[in-house]
Length: 94
Image (tube, rainbow, N blue to C red; front, side, top):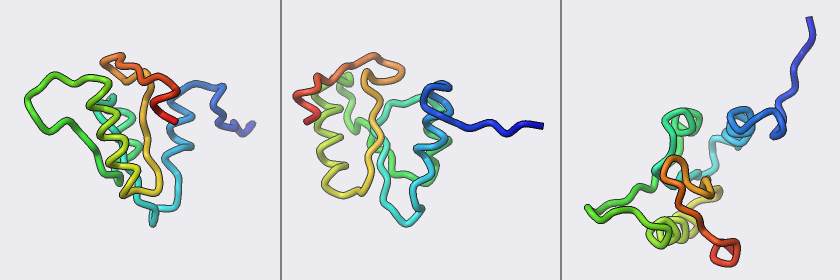
């Protein structure tokens, strides 16, 4: 029997499994919407979802990202977003 090592090159799911393993004492946020499987890996995290009835946009995702970064040690953000495909340019993320 051989052991298998997870690596980002093995696929996004395995990468998320590894990423979901920070010390549980850390405050972790996930910017939503996000696939259910990803949210399951981060079940201990705070989910930052859109709070109004306005259609989600890259700008609203960026505002949620900034808010989460002020209060959390780690923030998970798919870019482009899953499943909507919103993209935040690198300059905005920096």
